[in-house]
Structures are given as C-alpha cells and as structure tokens.
Image (tube, rainbow, N blue to C red; front, top):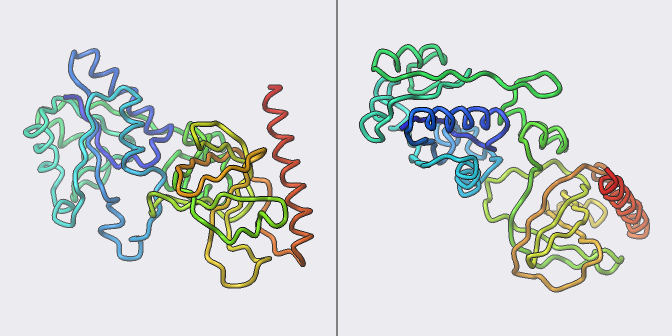
Length: 298
C-alpha cells in the first residue's frame, strides 16, 4: 500500500493534489493506493469549545469523492481520545503492520501522532522505519493564501461561495429532505422548499439569498435559496434553508433535495412589509436569471 492519511474535509484542491500524487505513486510501483481517514473530526473530540465544528463534507460524501479520484481503498478509523495519544512512530507502525504500508505521503502541514511538531518530524520518523516518504507541496488560492478546510469554512460562513468553490474545486452544496414550513412564501407568489439536512454537522453558508442549482425528483433545476431567520416575519425565528425553485410547483414534501450554491445575490434584510419583501424577491429572481443567461452564453 501507498498511504495518505488525514481528515480530508472537503476534499479540496490541496487534498486533490495529494490524492493525485498518491494514485500516481501507487501506479508506478504496481501497488494499491489507500487513504486512511478519521471520524469524527479530531477537534470535535479533543476541544470542548469546538464540538460543534461544522464540516464541509459528510463521511459518505468524503468517501465517494476519494474513490472518484481513483483511490483503491478508503479506511475510516474512529478518532477517540485514546487514539489521539498514539505517537508518530506508533501510528506509522500501525499503517505498516495493519495495512501493509510501504510508502506514505506527507503534506506540507501533515502531522501524524501526538509528538510530531511538523511534517519534517513525520518524514524523519517514517524514513527511520523504512517507509518511503513522498512529500507534497502547498496549494495556494487565487487570492494568495494557502488552501485549507479552515479557510474554506471561513469563506462559506462569510457567504463567499465563489471563492470557496475555487478552493474546493467544485461548487459547495447541501443535501437533505424537504419538510413543511409556514407556507408564507406561497401567499406572496414564491413557494419554497424547506430543507432539513441529513447531516446536522454539515456547514451552512452565511445568511443571505443565493442563486442555486437544485436537484430533486431526478431533475436538474435552478432557484434562489434564502438562508436565515426571516426577520420580516418577526423576531426569534429559527434559522432555515428555503429554496424557491424556478418554474416548479410540485409537492415534494418528504423527498430528497440537493442545493448547490452558484453565487450570492444579497445579504438577509428585514423589510417593512410583506409587499416590500415580494418586490425584492422579484428583483432577486431577475438577478438569478441574468446570471443564468450570462453563464449559458459563455
């Protein structure tokens, strides 16, 4: 086995470089490629204040993405406090003894084991055990900073889905089931599908209105998604994910829905009346359709 190990949240462009090198190295050697990853996230186990850390990918999404990139095997280890006490040498010996690792990829910030101060420490320990070490470089975003899951979460929370997509290498999306809402949207001409996420720890982008692609009933559609607490309705509302699907008015309660974010239209705003809200929603829809028209010409 040629092994890469890490959490790989988002399987972003930096991760994809690692996986590409992993698959190529295994092919050259005539070996199999393996990713050893963890669940739950180490920060949710070790840091009390981070136990609600939101993730870019569910476990199923992450495994599917890794396999789609050509990885032969994906092994998921349960991350516990006891597991976190393994030293670098103990962890690498486990990869050798349990998975037959003969080579290991070490990223620029890849630390394995509780006693490794940096990637160089990991590389030295691996070589001392007879493992071949394959080093991987940092990937930078178009804005000049290192691509990381943390930076992508920050951009999504700020509503910058375009910058997040550039770092991820794909448009960010949410997956869930359609649940009943208060049907207010229908009364002003904008019926919405309210989404309940399948994975509660999946990160939801910052509040606002977004142009989105929608997948439901095995059909690819477009719409606008509002994320927020509906301040025009009144104070103290729970945060919701509501999508108005363009040219669509079918009953999909209880059915599967995927929403993929294309671009942000505006921030969430409290309006003086429902009529003002309706007028703004018409402008939002026009803005989305303009983006769609321009993209279809490109």
